[in-house]
Image (cartoon, rainbow, N blue to C red; front, side, top):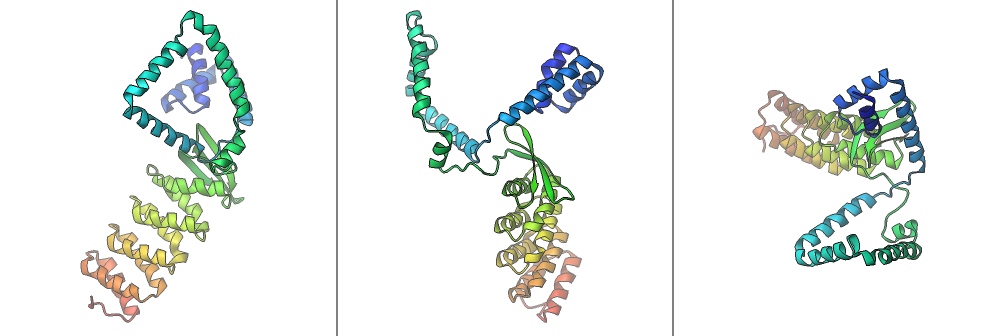
Length: 307
């Protein structure tokens, strides 16, 4: 790699836009080239200054803009004839106007921008009118990593417009929402397990508990489901938890998950538990799960053979 190519790619490296192989090649060049390494340091410093001046994107604004754009594109698709007229008009009179119109057009655009900025409400009042708060959890496109430390803080790496990281206490609403997003990440079971392991101290929060119940019902990885079961253990007597445990016991394809579900259901000591275990024994093929179910029924003095 030569210096010209390296300097073109340094910005992409800073913003995480290079592949692993491209990063390796560029890093090798930077290790050997003092001038290019100095250029990287300069651009990293410039990027940090830009971060300091960057405004916080209100929560929900990015999602709202995407929805509005999708709706506008759909409307455009349904009215091709009208849109083509406007496009032709705009192209003829604004993009490529006649020579005699260009000075007047430039003045008109300048006037529109000037008076529009004065007439439009400021960002904070406009956002409050449409129900967007300004001190909110971030709009998340992808959580990359969660990492607790000994001080009780949690470090979360996530993507917004570009990669970011946030450090804070588990009680911080922004941290908790990032962890909830990571716990539902479909692509990374390890990330889901780490997130649930941190969230298990927050199961008194209804939103967290319901998220873990969804994981228990729907996650495709049995290890993640077992981690959710462990986090829900203190709430085995909760009606929603007990209902989900019964569903899992009768439908989950992993014997270890079914066994743990039996242990949690038995903790609740509710009358309907015996009926669920009796129903399980009708179709259960795993010998260990059957023996655990039979033992639980015997402990409850319920009939094993009554269905």
